[in-house]
Image 1 (cartoon, rainbow, N blue to C red):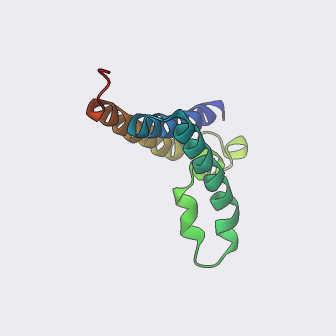
Image 2: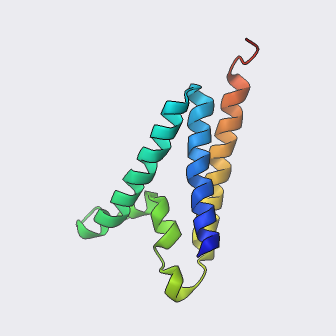
Amino acid sequence: MALQLAFFGFAIGAVALALAALTGRKAVAAGGAGAFAVLGFLINGFAPLVDGLEWLKYLSPFYYYSGHDPLTNGLDVGGLVVLGAATVVFTVVAVEGLRRRDLRA
């Protein structure tokens, strides 16, 4: 459970890092990452309740963190892979965003 929580935190942190690198504004990074987390929580909770919207749960990082009941079933390797891949993708976006910014000023 703690390992999945760490990967969840890495993924949300990578979203914040990518937003900060692309925009250069810490308010956008913090607000965007927070909004992404809250929206993911709401999607994970409400999508299974609405017919035809259950597929949205796969867009939520909360699904990969706790969607497979890790306290009962143990570690979910598939969820770790998805959260790890999302972390890598958003970190690469952040690195590319920083490369394109003019930081010499």
